[in-house]
Image 1 (cartoon, rainbow, N blue to C red):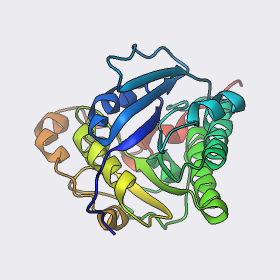
Image 2: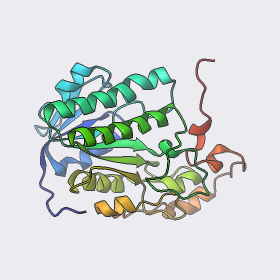
Image 3: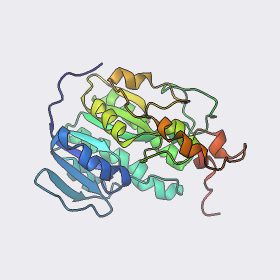
Length: 272
């Protein structure tokens, strides 16, 4: 399931462009589009040339999202609340927002979405378990629930309207792993771009769920569906092993050592 043609799209939409990954992708995705439309509810740096469009948009505003999607060929949906928060805070951007994105895609004939899902969809699996994308979901948080909902939305919009999606369950996308858990979940910025490239161009994906991780040792996720897309990670957390293993070892019952979702498994409740 690979493609030989990687001709640039005319216009790609990147939501969440003001976020940490959005800032990285703003530059690394330029080879894949003549124009990248950059959007966020937060301030986005002004367009640097005529190959960028900057549009402020609240994902909870259905009409605004509909206007945002008009004229784009594919959507990279990285927008929304990216950490655990109260359900009410998650609801607008992550749950209503993903619905608005897919409804706008349907209305405007967009046929490919790359959805930034999360490892927190399966966060309550233990770290001694190995799972793949077909394993039952076990969300660890309101945030994880919202990403699980987004994956269901992607399945529905493919089955009903033929909109194809690759949902990337992003592990830990940082310049380098920050703890022992991230030695298994780390995703380099370079490998993130490589995976998105395959998610954009691989044909016949339907709705495919993959794990966003580099070529790490001691992994918990069988990522054969990403391999089928043609994804070949080039980086590994192992180069940081000595630095990470010099850090203090958490206690054996610390969620960061027990669960694949780490600290998200115990965040909250909120408002008590």
